[in-house]
Image 1 (tube, rainbow, N blue to C red):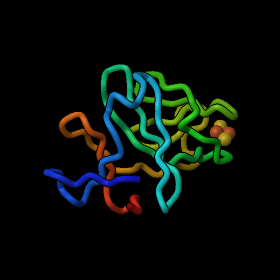
Image 2: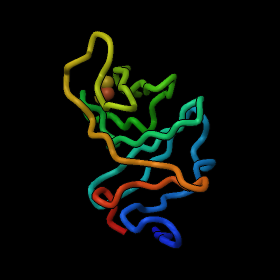
Image 3: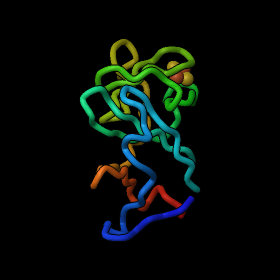
Length: 117
Ligand code: FES
């Protein structure tokens, strides 16, 4: 992976253009600490979670994004993108770690602690 640091705070790493993530979709980013799922919602917000469902570690990056949630492709738990917590009947049954993410000048930036370079 090429890391671009130009006028971006070096504590954050550029992982691509926000437009590389389909609207109401996601993209998987490989890091030394494991895969991260970066989501783009229908209202244009971007969220990032460790790409691992709290149930049986299903790949959330392959789930269906709706509102600010994602439905896991394996057993259909719904995970809140902002908190990593399951919702509805599965609330309180674990949590997927949230990865700090932000968008600057159309680029998606992930926080340093999850990135290897
Ligand atoms: S692994 Fe995600 S709902 Fe079972």
